[in-house]
Image (cartoon, rainbow, N blue to C red):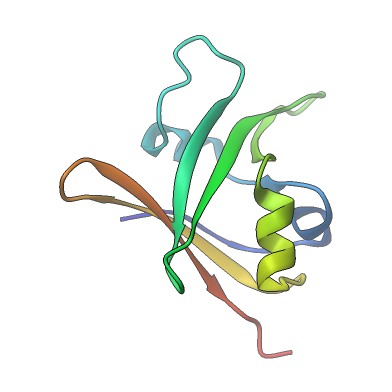
Length: 105
């Protein structure tokens, strides 16, 4: 089940991945913590990344993935216009996976 799909912006590539707040329901619970770490498997090669989800500060707080994201972007050579799909599989417990779709530009 796809949690969200996002065409990456320059901010997503350079700093952090922001995503829709309604997608939080499919991530592990925060349980009073300001951030959560969770493992995400790369759909392409099976490597596991630890991402940290928190909230962007400011007038319009929004969930963002920060820790682990920059390394993932560099590893995949992601650019603005590429798409990522974060999804969850629930066969024997919840597992998170990420898929990259490069833009044709």
